[in-house]
Amino acid sequence: MTDKSPNIDVCKIGGAEFAFVYHRNPRSIEFFPLVWECARKLRDDPRKVCSSILVSADITCRLDQIEWAYTTPFYQSKLVFYFGGGEILYVTLSNRNVLHSGNDRFIADDLKTYLKSGTYGQRDGGPRDITLEWVFYFAPTPFRRSKYLVCEPLASDGPVVLLDTKTFIRDWREQSQPGSKLANLVRRRFEFHEKGGNRDDLELINSTRSLSKKWSLVREMPCGVGFNYRGEIAFSNGRHRTVNLANAGSPYIPVQVAVDQEEVMRDRFEWPGVNGL
Image (cartoon, rainbow, N blue to C red):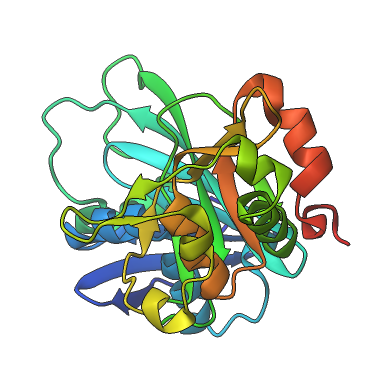
């Protein structure tokens, strides 16, 4: 730590309280849990936590313009936010886990000592490191009470592509039209509710915004989208989520794709804001 006498402030988010220290050179924030609720809050929505800390500190800058570190007695997470097309698109959390012996206290118990020394409760012979990394994607949903959907870290290694909502919905709708070649080739019906009969893709695509407003999730997995052997759009999961995101006003939809389909998916549907357009 470069500051010998750091200023420790507190930010309250719901039932969670974080202590944090702002360093001006380089511009960085290190924040710490004061209650157990903090871990869940950060896991649920790292964007909201860090945005709230900026507001508490009266700092006017984007999340990606700060070096972030979340420190507990057991690990430190480096958070790196990525910006494009006027939006924070995703954040990576890289954990450097330091395993301690017999240390189950919050770091807040001895926060000032930690900040002055830069170390906390290391084992004899130094810390053992385990490095883990998670990626959270964000989709802006201005027409919902929850203004962002947080996409959970991935369970597999397939790449994530941010699809342009208008282009993707347009092609999916065209594919599903009753007189089109594609619809004649692959006319499918899906079970929508156990007792509600069947609804096809076109009916789902044409769902109204008022129906999507009932969708209250703030965390989800990226949709699973690919192409079948005819080159048609096909879902492994997330048809309803895709329509809800479109109705909620998101300019892009995070989807996970197979590695061998990533290039063609980007060529056809990638949101231009990824490249700053």
